[in-house]
Image 1 (cartoon, rainbow, N blue to C red):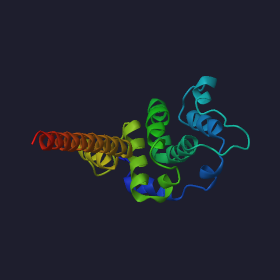
Image 2: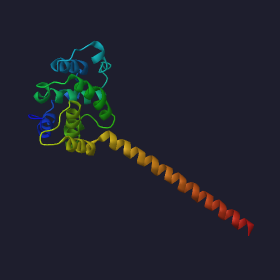
Image 3: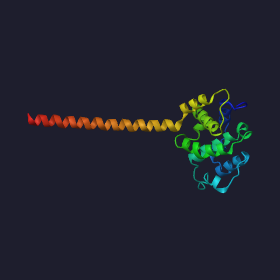
Image 4: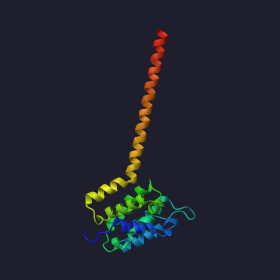
Length: 185
């Protein structure tokens, strides 16, 4: 696509995220404003999912990640050619998944997490980064995928625990057999 945004330009936007977006933003209002800017018809249930948190309580990571994603999507690269469905996909599916494994501040401070959020946004909005093919963009996102990495690590830990349990059981069985053999002799 001509005029496609570069990953670098969008990463720069994340670097420049105002501190207020990580502090205590009013997420439903931010989401509502973005949806209107994207040309979406906004209903109460649309923004209710990003609902208020208890007064005085710290904002949870999911809300903070959503606020950072909203800041990113306010970039002209997205607003000049809006995709409300892509916006909802990013905010309702991708960001909540990311928030389960990545602290919101890392979306602004960590180079790989910034790039991951940018690439998630580009994918959700149906864009391929400038200078990349769809396959290259998908491959790079796969290498950065925090949720998949967490899933693989959890599966690896579970497999290691199962292997340790099998080794222990085999060791105990061998010890019992050795004890039985010694008592027969």
